[in-house]
Image (cartoon, rainbow, N blue to C red):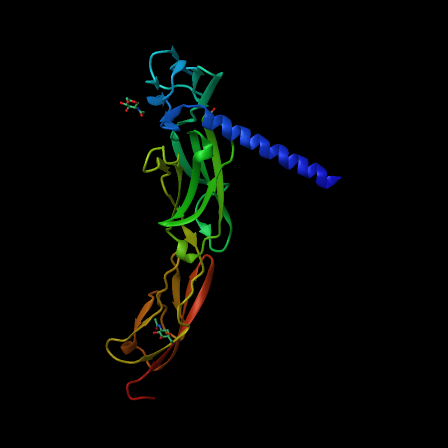
Length: 299
Ligand SMILES: *[C@@H]1O[C@H](CO)[C@@H](O)[C@H](O)[C@H]1NC(C)=O
Ligand SMILES: *[C@@H]1O[C@H](CO)[C@@H](O)[C@H](O)[C@H]1NC(C)=O
Ligand SMILES: *[C@@H]1O[C@H](CO)[C@@H](O)[C@H](O)[C@H]1NC(C)=O
């Protein structure tokens, strides 16, 4: 029973497809171009032509109507300032030996966004390494969103992209968010987003793209020395260098010294052989480094 039923549905579907394809190839009209893409307020034109004798042909549309024409085989639909988001021009022909047939011209009316803006959601000021933050990209007044891609970048690296499936033809606002977990390498990184309209082969090339002004991210992180121990052979040039790149800037303290020193660098020639520990401290934490100073004599 079920098999009979699906068999019937299949045959029905195939016969529908055959008749649809047949109807299209039977209508002796050629559109040039076969699809148009036009900026809102821009000008647009498309030709409809035939090679058969006919009783009249014309264009139906809410703008740029071409009334039924008998003595021509090429008629042009033309609008000099298209200000309709959902226009559906149709070219038709009244055939001599059969009824009227028609072909639709797909029209995509687009508008680039008025603005693209990036912001941080519920946060101000520096970010902490390893914590999660949300960035937001607002795209204002763009159409049609079906052809919109919002891309996220850090510097020149593409991080993520979003497309939309809404079939709305009028301008929309779109908000896209991105979760980030910055690390120390992201301090001073530039995050930005851009809105790109890829309107297909008939659309403008390169694709219209509007970029947000980049967001400069400041990341706070704990001091960390690349080496925790270093051996120094005492001479005139060799330094004990405790300097560490960190944000916010650290303070430095040294153990095993008679006087208090806040410099991050000491001259080995001014020290006696032994162990010296330096600690870099900022608001997030501290990290120590041990220097073993040996005399040239080799004690
Ligand atoms: C329409 O046809 C005319 C006459 O052949 C031609 O000059 C024009 O470029 C064509 N326009 C388009 C949009 O194809
Ligand atoms: C988009 O945002 C603007 C400004 O906030 C607003 O005036 C407009 O009505 C919004 N458009 C839509 C389609 O929601
Ligand atoms: C850190 O230690 C490694 C291996 O012990 C050494 O190759 C490197 O030069 C040291 N780096 C510094 C800045 O002293």
